[in-house]
Image 1 (cartoon, helix red, strand yellow):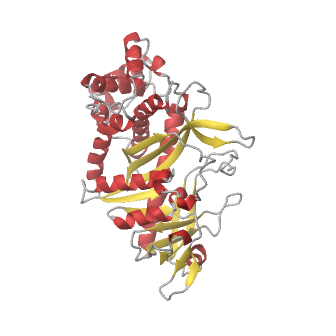
Image 2 (cartoon, rainbow, N blue to C red):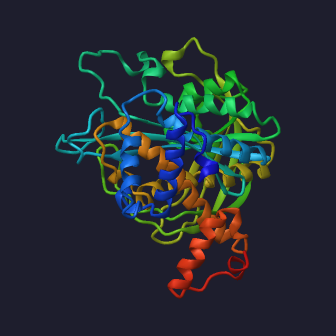
Image 3 (spheres, rainbow, N blue to C red):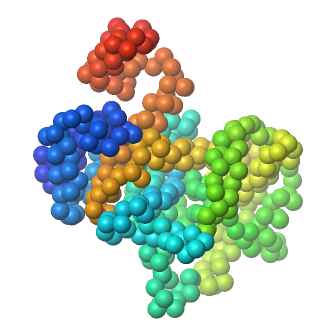
Length: 425
């Protein structure tokens, strides 16, 4: 963990050293509160609370805590030909912390009761084979309800004042990262929340990072002939380009919430998709009449014969990647399938690291604890996937000599069988 967290620019070297110690202890028992993870070390527990409860200042921020890991992630990205930088958001519920200051409203139930918490927006880098490379960027903010005195229409509010600006900020950050790795192709993969005109307009200003976004809106498009059509209708009626088999990950059941529909549990499966694509021009919304259309490609993938009891898979993907052939479209679909990595990452963060059980007196102090757990969650996910993909990988790739000695001692004490190469280190 020293490599991933050491040398953080926190304004005091002692704070940086303490950060490494905290992360190391918490990573050994990620599902426990720090008081349990410290295993009775009173000095360590006291040091943790001094670190987290440090008076709010700019130096001890989420961004600075994550900076060493970000630099390690960038170095790992530089060794790849193609990197998917997946953006997504997740709400962290802290409604039970009635004493916590500066939380925001993350939802309202059917009775009008508000849920309090923070919204986490992450940029998670994975290789083209799906290996998690690390967290490029993360922000954790308190959503605010629109004031009743604010009579502006949605389109009259600057994008910088909207929650959706997180997607634009994430793309701008990727452009900065791309400047450090001219030999690496960076693709920003996003779900439907990122389907808004301003994001594509932002990409046009500096197209060094490509977009791959699942479409949410059946927009108006313009053909080369000048004919105006609807996006979904146009591409779904175009020529079939081929068939491709993709793995659909399992989906957990989700109860109905104020802004989302209920969702039934679905097991993972293989789906055979019909694939169509075409180049289109996205017309700007009516309130952006002074803006020019944006040229993108749209890919339509649909499962014509789903298994009994399963809902048919259907995706409309908008991308700035040039699609010249069916193989190009198939590749984009396989890349989009890796978007679920960030949902798995957020699941590890909540279930494995239990970040929603964090209890501190201010939102800023919660952010510090969340930042530490982000790196731990990445490491857990990386070890899990490496264990599945490359089970014979030498353990010293991920573990220090001290950690290996502890693992061996623990395994021997509990009578576990462990890999032969662990014994020979």
